[in-house]
Length: 156
Image (cartoon, rainbow, N blue to C red; front, side, top):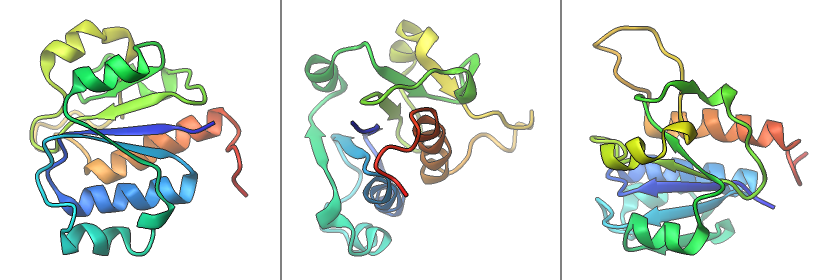
């Protein structure tokens, strides 16, 4: 029983490192869809994740299609600033997959358009200069809501 965090083509090693640390601390699995915008040997990636890397359950995919082929579509959510639904409107379950897009472009429009009912957003003020939150912060907000809904399994 775990929440699955999926990063689609992440670009910034520090974000991925921080997200990896969140995964280790929550028992969540980390799924990375290539291409990655950094080397897995990156000192920034390792520094951000500190000594948590051996605690991770990490999976790698060469494409979004490969991920969906393996996990199915039933328990997949899409985090985007373009969603109609707030993350608090969603009913998360154990073993769900929450996909976050790359820092500069997000999740491709065609994927969002095909999955409108499972797209979610974090509410923000309406200000064109405040386009989005940092990726690692967004993951933390949504993952902890999902974990709250399933009663923080195996957590103290």
